[in-house]
Each structure stands twice: as C-alpha cells, then as structure tokens.
Amino acid sequence: MIKTIIIGSGFCSAVLTKVLNPNNNFLIFDKSRGPGGRSSTRRVDDVGFFDHGLQYISPTTKEFDFFLNQYLKSSIKEWSGDFRCFEDGKTMDSKKYIGKSGNNCFVKDLVTTKVEYLKELVTIDRKNSKWILRFKDKEVQECERLILTIPLEQCQKVTNSLNLELNFEGSMEPNLTAMIAFNKPLKLSSCGIKFQNNSTLRWAGNESSKLRIGNNDNLELWTLQSSLEFAKKYCHTYRDQKEEVLNFMIQEFTTLLEIQNVEISHKDIHGWLYAFKNKDFSRKFYWNKDINLGICGDWMCGPKAEDAWRSATLLANQINNS
Image (cartoon, rainbow, N blue to C red; front, side, top):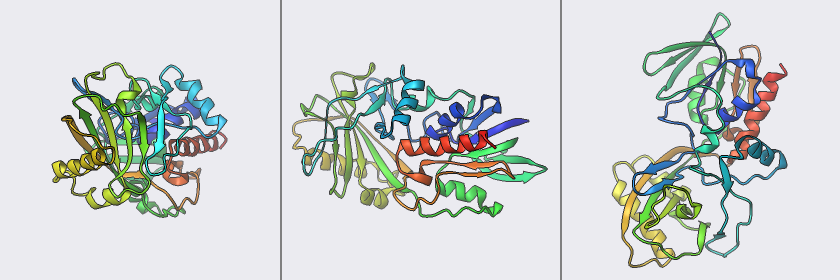
C-alpha cells in the first residue's frame, strides 16, 4: 500500500515532495494532462511559449528566495525589463523569476516523485485506518496518508462527508487568459503592464521579452489576463463565445496601447475557474493526525505562489514532527 497520496500536481505538491521526509513513498494524482496546475505553460508550434497561468514569482522573504535557488537554480532566471502600472506609470521593481523554458518549470523540475495524470478524484473514505480513493475512471487507490492540494471548492466537495473541524471560508475567483501572437514586433518598451482600473484587463505580459528558445522571433507574443469583473461575466460561457471574448480582450489591449496596423497570427483563450483567493484566510494549513489527512494551498493563506510554498512547508514540517 502507498504511504502518502497527494491530490493535485501544482506548486504545493511539488514543495511537499521536497520538504516531507523522503521515506514517505509518495504518489501524486492530478486530473489535468500535465504538470504545473496554475504554473502552466502552453507551447504552440511555430509560435512559441505562453505562460497562461502564473506570470512570475517575486519572493518577499529570504527563505522563499533561498528555496527557489536551492532547488530550481538551473531551471529559472530573472525576467528583467520595464514593468509598470498603466494608469499612473508607477514601476514594478520587484525581482521576477520565470522558468527558462516555461513557468511549468516551477513544478515539473521540482517534483521528485511519480505523477499520474488524467486522474480525477471523485470520493474519499476512511476505513480500517486507511484512505480509500475512488477516481472518475473507476480506479480505486488506498493509502495511509492523504494530502489534498486542490482548490477550495473541490476540497470542500470531496471532504464534505468527513465532518472536519475546518471552516471553508469565502471562495476562489475566476480568471480568463488570452494568448496572442501579433504578426510583427509592436515596438513597445514594456515587458509587463498592470491595469488597476480597467473593466476588461488586469495584466498584459510580453512573452517575447522572456527570451526563450523556441519563440518565433518574427512574431510578438502577449498574454492578456482579464479583470475579475470580466472573468465573472464570461467564465462559464467563454467556450461558446470564444471569438467574441477574445476580440473584447484584444480590442481593449490594442486601443489602450494605441497599437495599429498589425495582424493576429495566433489567438487562444484559457479559463481558470479557481484562479486565486483574495480574502478570508483563517488558517495556513490543516493537519489531522488522527485520520492522517492534510490540506494545504494558497487559498488558505494568500493569493501568491509564495503563499502556496508557505502553506505546504508548514504542513510538511507539522507532519515530519508528528
């Protein structure tokens, strides 16, 4: 029987595989097609790479910066350039790490255990001091210890029958991300633009400025992330209105930046139903030694990757010392 099963293959689970004692006999399951969770990168043939989830990581503590450089030094680099807020022109001067070949490097180059993909967890049960996990494809797995690193709403659903002393406060918010390739360089000085008061856009990142091998130098690649207002309006319908939603976001971007006489060589959109959580943080992790159940995630203590690292690290330390 497997010692520890982790559900979710995002940044939290990757951190757990480094911080938990190595004798835990891990196995990770995730419903997605590949590693990363929200630290995702999409490669488009003859176009290049788009970080359509996490844009970068800016450590605010020495401990987190040390962790990244200890385990990912050969996989990450600093994203240098001009970053500023659109409305007031204020610069964003914090150090920004990105993956050398895509931001999924933050996960795939950190994970040290086997991951099984396309495995959607449906139910969990506790019987005879072990966990019974049932997946959508009818497979059943057993383990001694279970750790959930999935979004709040999904976590609440699978643990609903357990009567945990855990208050699932608030909810996670959606985001829509457009991946755009223009047919020629736009000659903009910005690598990243934050929109504070726009009803359509929240962020625009110049993917071409990340200087990755495999990007088409004849094109200019941008990732556009929506405002919360826009995401809430279209997150459940964007698949059926793909062209319309993309055009809204592209038109807003080109109008704001006064971009003219360009064509779109590639465009696509991805929706994150559970992208982030901005408030209602009551605890940093959950650990129940009696039933060998752990829960961690950025939704428990903050909206950033550093919060996911903190939550996973605190949980791992608690388990190691129990």
